[in-house]
Length: 385
Image 1 (cartoon, rainbow, N blue to C red):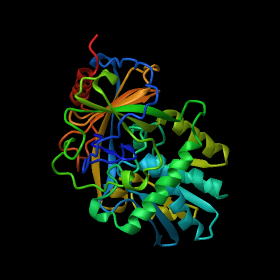
Image 2 (image 1 turned 180 degrees about the vertical axis):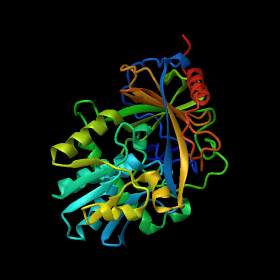
Image 3 (image 1 turned 180 degrees about the horizontal axis):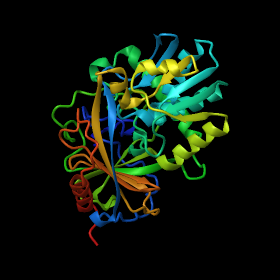
Image 4 (image 1 turned 90 degrees about the vertical axis):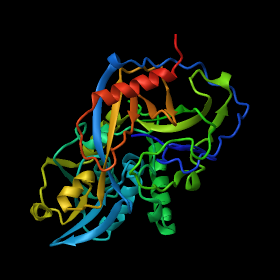
């Protein structure tokens, strides 16, 4: 998942998937520099996992609406592109309002990924009884293969779809999610953490500094304009203030998820609060009639394309690679031209890249050659000992 992002006045907007503008970061603020950076051991023989998922992109943005199907009310909550984890709590809050409008107290949630889990927990906190019906559960769901960075407008919708009303709804969802993620800081397993990161570029930061893959639409860029108060500004660094092989660098701050502990936390909360989990596959909406609950939340993500025949969902292939964990590495890395993004997770150094042809590509077969190439590009950016 290539983070072709831009440096906004409110910080490095990791959520922005296209570099429509790259305003220069602000100059150093006089704060004490961070301690020396631990080196990343970037070599192909340290790869321990390669995972691929299909991000469910909809040009119009997520589908969050109620629909009457027979005797059931189905609240759809899917199609979040690359912003599933990031918007999950806010999306759940919007879906919950539609559920509560029915007056029912028993709710079925279909799907056990980021959206399904957070929707189920949110409904429980509102006093509802919830049963999750899903074919797979963490760590086998697609959400388990996500990058694990708070990117609330990553491949969310096209620029044309970002009307003023859409932007208001998105901002409310993003802020709700952000507040909720802050409540999970400092818990055992570190499900949520803040990290520094370094943006690198071969040319000065500004319009056109990052590349663009052919065939992808013009995505909406929202975070830098609407959420500028939620994270520190990025700081431009002098050549001697960083050890990386790049002509230009800036330091930013990012919010990240350790997805394994996070999923365990959410699942434990759900079950301890009386939730039930049933392993079940759905091939057609007609099977909804078999469920005892009268209200269902459809949180099937990319699966909604086949289940509902919703061809507005476009798969965007995303491959991530994990290197052997290095607890001493607590910083991220992103090079705007070399297609390298790194997140320092507890389960390993996560390296990702977006390849030409990933938009509209439903193939989830791991490509080890692509992962090896990304690791080698990372190694070329690091100090040579």
